Amino acid sequence: MKPANVETKIKKGDNIERAIKRFVKKVKKERIIDDLRERMYYEKPSVIKRRMKKRRKATLDKLKAKQETN
Image 1 (cartoon, rainbow, N blue to C red):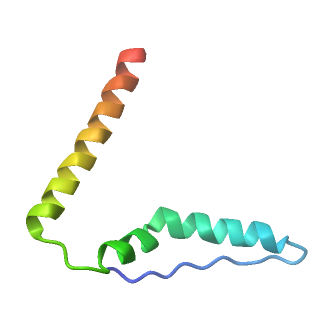
Image 2: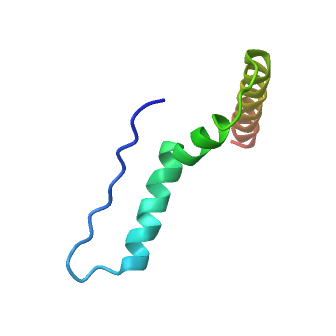
């Protein structure tokens, strides 16, 4: 697991809700919460491979559909 150093600087007069939204967006982009959920329980290597294969297929299908519309 890579180190997760996510920070959001708040400027003077900046809205705190916007700063929280920016922070949450950065956390989602770094996939910190997803990694923690995946590592909460042991997952067999075959299950990991199956999940990754399914994710790759969905991404490729999405790209293929996008290319067909253009």
